[in-house]
Length: 204
Image (cartoon, rainbow, N blue to C red; front, top):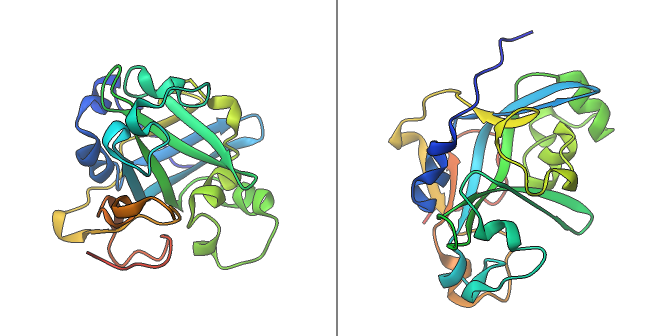
């Protein structure tokens, strides 16, 4: 069993949303559950800049029961369900500035057998966690974490591997139709050449 990394401090999430999305690449997402611990290196993220971003749930400061947590302090957990899949987001942008970063994909590290059990298939390993709904199912992350913090166990982000600027790719976000020009913003970031990311891998 690997030694689990220490959680990143709460202050880490106070950086601007675009910078945060890029800087989370290479960090380790850890979930310590009753079934066991599963973790993975974050390989892909997407930034959502709230009030000015038509693709964000909080566009024009839209405040609902679902988006309420986004108006709080950075480092809170924003989970929501889309097409039966739970998606994991980290709140950013500052209080009353509802922005967030979607964790889109991870490369499994700890708990491979548990991950395969949860995914219930024999697909190649890179297909187990190469999407936002896939990774939450694989790591056992549910809607119950809504409103919690991402800098304390049992669900947290810790240090990981260093990713040089030359290894970072950026391109349009995925799965956000009917959002006008916002769908073309190059606010999706991934580790170039890593197989554990979503498709397409079109760069801007």
